[in-house]
Each structure stands twice: as C-alpha cells, then as structure tokens.
Length: 585
Image 1 (tube, helix red, strand yellow):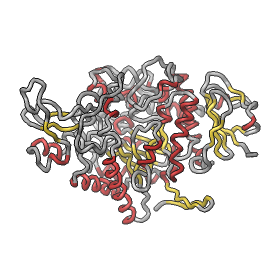
Image 2 (cartoon, rainbow, N blue to C red):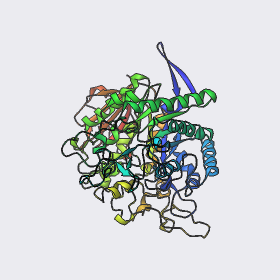
Image 3 (cartoon, rainbow, N blue to C red):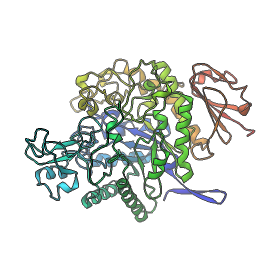
Image 4 (cartoon, rainbow, N blue to C red):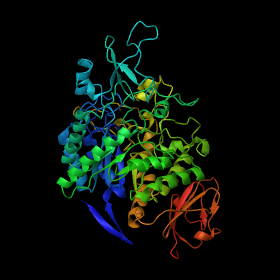
C-alpha cells in the first residue's frame, strides 16, 4: 500500500495519495481530437498530457470511455470491458496509462453502476426473453397496471415514479409485452437490480479488469438511486412547485436506500481484496451524489466498509454569500472527524461553469442555493465579475483539507456556452424536456488549445486525409481567446493562478495539516485559520481593511487571487481571496 504513517498524539493516521490529491477531470469527447473527426479521443489526451502534468496535479479522471451508443455520452454503457470505438481501443488506453505514469499521473475511471445502455447485451437478451426469465431478473421488469380506459390490462406503468431527466421512469418492453422496465434517468438507460447475483459478479469483474490495466480508482456515478424498495410502491406527492428535474430525487423509495449500502460494501470488499492480493497498490473509489447540507448522509456512505471519499458539492452549489459559503465549509469538513477527508469540486460536466454561475446577477442571492446541479439560473451574466470570483473561489477551495477535483477548462477560465443552437444540442436533459431545460452541453464544448479556427482552435489534429471535421459541439466565436497556447504566456492568467495555488498547496502541506477554524472578522469576509495560514475571501464588491482586524494583524501576505492588487497593504480587494502567514500564531 502506498501510504505513510503520521503521529498525532496517541493517534496514528495512514496517509494515502488520494486523501490530498489534486485530480484533473477529462471529458474525453471534448478534450483533444487526434484523428480529425471532431470527437475527442484517448490519443488526443496523450497528445496533451504535458499540459495536465504542468499544472502539478496528481491524477486524471476519465469520464466514461466504454462502448456506448452515446445517448448520454458514455453514461449509457454498452460494454464495461472495452473502449468506445470513437475514442480508441484497449491498446491506446494502455499507452495512455503508461504515459501518464511517466509523468507522475495516476488514472481514475468513471463507473456507472445504476444502469447500462439499452444496447448492452444483457438488456437486449432481457427484452427478447419472457417475463420471469433469468435475463429479466438482472433489471427491474414489472407487469404494468391497467390502462385508464381499461382496454389494456398492462397499459399503464407499474407505479408513478418519474425519471430524473423528465417524464415517466418506466418504458414498456414492447406494445404487446405485459411488462415495463425501470429507467431512473432515460428509457435508454435501464436500471440494474443489484440484488441479482449476476449483476454483483459482473461489477466485481469490472473492478478487477481495469485494476489489472493500471487504473488506480473509480469515481462512482449517481449513487443516489442505487437500491430500491423491493415492493416498488408509488412515490408520495412532492411539495408544490417542485422542479421537473427534482421530482425523481424526492422519491423515498429509490433515493439513498439502505439496499444501496449493500452494493457499496460489496464494491469495497472487491477493492480491499484486490489490494491484499496486489501489495503496493493503493486503490480507491469516490462517490458522486448531491448531499448538500446533509453531512449525516456523507458519514453514512464514507467509512471503512464503503466509500473512501464522497464529493463535497456544497461549495460548488453555493451562492457567493458569506453565510452559505461558511455553511458549505462547515458541513463538508464534518467528515474529517471520522478520519476521512473531504473531496472538493467547483466545476464538473454536469453544472454550468463557475465563471458563468458566479457572474450571474443572482450569484449573491442566499436564496439561490440548490441541491440540484441541473437547476441552472437564467439571470444576466457579467463574465469579468464571474472570472474574478472564480479566481477567488478556487483560492479558497485550495486552502481546504482533503482532495480537490478540477474540471478541464476551468484552469482557462472558460465560461458556459449558453447559446448552443437547439439543433446541435445533444444532452438528454434538453431532449427529454422538449427544450424546457437547456441541459449540460454548454460546459462540454471542445477545449481551445490554439487561436487557429481552422483546427477548431487546436482541438482537432488533421486526420489521414489532412482534413478536420467540425467539432461534435460548436465552439463559439472568440473561443481562441481562452486558448491554452495564448494564456500560457501570461503570468497573470488563470493557468498561472492554478499552477501557483497547486504548488503552494503542496509546498505548505495545506491539504493535510491543520484543522479549519472559521473566524468572524467582518461582514462579507469569509475568514479561516489553519495553523499559521490565514485565508480571507471578500465576497463583497468593496475592499475590506485587514489592518483593523486584530486576529490577523501583522500577518504576512503570501498569495492573492488578484496579484496586481497584492501591493495594497492591509486590504482584501473586492471578490478576492488572500493567503496570509501569521508567524506569531
């Protein structure tokens, strides 16, 4: 096991690489295209690995790259033991893992346990089989209820459950089939029944297959609905005004069920057994679920029998408001008492990018806090304000204990692309709500590497024919202004900020050392102390004088998210984070 022991009084704590890691998330389809077809691929990631390594991160996490019909861009898995043909093959994957290792980067993958694609061999066999068959037992097939007019004894869904992306959660197997199947997200993503022995055995084999290829861990997708009330009763009424995309998450019969814990215990047993049989491997899994303001839930999932970590999305979902940010910090670090560490993120492939979120006119409204990443605001955006706040937010997050996950492009200060033409949108959230919800395409736009529009701003390399196809999602005008090539020459750019923060975090052992103590110093100022390190985040539009704040008087400036304003003594500029060192602490 790759771990070290540290002494703290009578307590010995094992330190694992993932407890304080900085992980870079790669949305494969949009990172870099090596063959000119307009779709990102594994060779493209190999081509640009040096950029990732230059940031100083510890690992990369690949969004699903398994074979898939791409109805939900990889989260509809057709085969858990191979690579999607548009992205490469297992040989290319092995080269990527090896190349990453030479740069000191571990590789994590994305595991989708709740459901598969309707094109998965098991599900195709299930729809071809009869009700009550072993093939159907791997999923949730149930007889339908009589139709409202009585003309069809199985013409209505088995219960009233709604899907996370809109509409009913049930789809009839065929017009003359008495049974319907459950798809918590879409009809193209049928839910597995994890009480079935075949399902449990298959996922154990998935872990072992990818661990054998050098993968060091998994981000486990959508743990919330895994495990169902075995009776599948009707869901109770939801509160009036509940958003269409929130209805599924109000269902107590399929949300954070005790049956799910049995699944995670089995997963953990597989990981622990593999490590016992392979000395030197330090493997992990991190849970993806939105448990905002529910530290009790995090504790229920993160423990020695289940997950090593769970994402703390509270800060990601927080408005630019002192009370809400402090609450997000307090709730997220609650897990430290159990010996685990928080796992922070400010961006991912499911939410509008932080530059846009914090640039909105509603960003400072305490009432805008949400527990649903798909509940995007629609108020006007000031990107200059949003980018400034995004710099301050990452500086605050980097000062926290635990690990932090970065989403590709956030280090470039990319905004959300809000004006993707309807005919080019591919997210099932948009499609299944008939356009009522714009979905997540805007945070998945292919990255700009250069300012050359002929190569989709460096995203695509010419293929064998010497041509470049249009990218799978359109890049907006001016996209090259945020290109890696251009920003890398600017010492005040967002990439420079990220490199400096990651280096400071590592040099000062910020992630693992002292506990967090929140300080009440001034209205609008998020202030915390971690040993000799003092971090101040001004969430107001006015400067705040620090020299009048006795608790940090005399502390030496170490870092500012706005370096050009660092020279102003004793002042925290508006929408800015500063790090101070209190040597007399």
